[in-house]
Length: 434
Ligand SMILES: *Cc1c(COP(=O)(O)O)cnc(C)c1O
Ligand SMILES: [Zn+2]
Image (tube, rainbow, N blue to C red):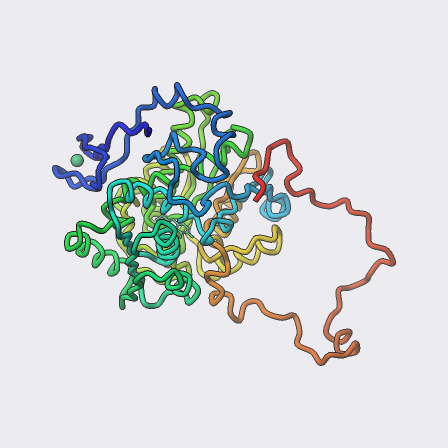
């Protein structure tokens, strides 16, 4: 049994039943899932969660659908890694990386899609559809296959090769559209009225989809030993993830899973080539003006973000900031994270790390804060971004002389030095093992 009390318009507050609805009939505002928090508080506990599955479904009491056998490939329960070496480079103190590259299809989207398709199946839909900048396409195609549903996925034609292959391999329908994501999304909205029997993950079941992002907040808190971080850095595409991460921390307080009134600052990260939210933040306005994206961070390239205003509001309310970084800085961010912590992120992860670096340099993210950066997609998805940037140190003939001529690691001690370095993860907080 779920604890959903219904849907509510985020603008005018009108109530709706928990069906495949996403906009308010009266004011066209987006709808949001509401819960009976008193009833949740009376059943939920840290122990009950700990006894649950090692996936997002351990938080089922706080999700918009209850199902003993959800549409599940194992999304969530990803590592929270203490990042001392990266922290030292950035002049920070306690820094953690939430490594969502470890999800089943390599991005955080598995969290939202697992929730959306479980609800869609419950509502009787047989076809799962979406417009995608890539990662959503991968995840919808995979989860639809898992659920025995058909999938129809629309992508911009210029998407990275890996993301096309990782969608098409699951055997659904994949349509490449000549245009930007915003063009694809507009076509998708038209298709929604043509095909009311299809569950469009980012349109008619978006209300449920969005709730899946809350599990990032839930997991981070649980992995920190049921403590909230002081500051979280979140990438922004449509702004949904950031908005729901904020909601997730608030809910943990509401149902009594976090003690006291923790205040979590939330900062947003965007690529300079698609930074409508960061621009509005910098200008101090409420108007998130649409832009035409031009960036290597394609998974974040939404020029007209549906939840942009809500993300901006959540950032301001929490006392966070929103930064934007150039494509060059994105590539540096990818290499910095890989070099210091051994985690290979896609371009969106580069955006997060480069923005973290920028906000740390500006003193916005502080060394006395417990900081978590959300790294949301795997580097193998966007390898072309690094073409010509990283490669072999040298290419040599198969001889010792050639090796010696090409490789010089500097003075070498006779014996390996005693290890006194870096104890990654050596804290009192539990780490998820995955
Ligand atoms: C979709 C996506 C995000 C954030 O998406 P929102 O639309 O803002 O919820 C972040 N990182 C990656 C890798 C993504 O694919
Ligand atoms: Zn309304």
